[in-house]
Image (cartoon, rainbow, N blue to C red; front, side, top):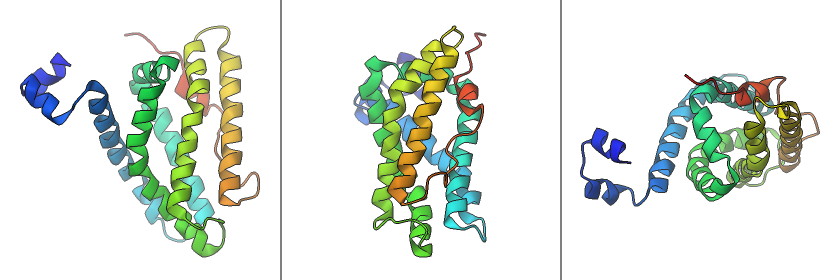
Length: 200
């Protein structure tokens, strides 16, 4: 915290006037990162001629691409955030990020509602619920990260993939879609995100 305060060029009192705690700073950073990430979905949202289901699959595909691309830089953060003892912080960050992403997802769900593809009386509420489901992945993600580089890695990755497949099925049911409509998991995506961290 002292390093951050020094880089910002503010007094400690001035810093804590804006952020009451380290956790509050992390929440703000997470929301700011989410806002920058949302801009990377602009082409998915604006692509002409895409039906809602195709747009939703493109949305999830872009999310996977971003996670894989950013994983090496974020690995140290992941190692800390997904520990069981940091569950409260994980939930706080999720709560800070979801309001940024939910409106983007809601636009796609609203399109699907208009097309009669998604059975979602309230697209905004459905988007919030779908994103909230992500909090159920923390334990499986934490176990997979902890097992990276060990003989338990394959089993932990398999368990996380199974959880993600069930997650996708739950999303399909929330949206009133037939099983297999959403491509929620691609081969080797989890392994790429979980890949053992290389120390510099």
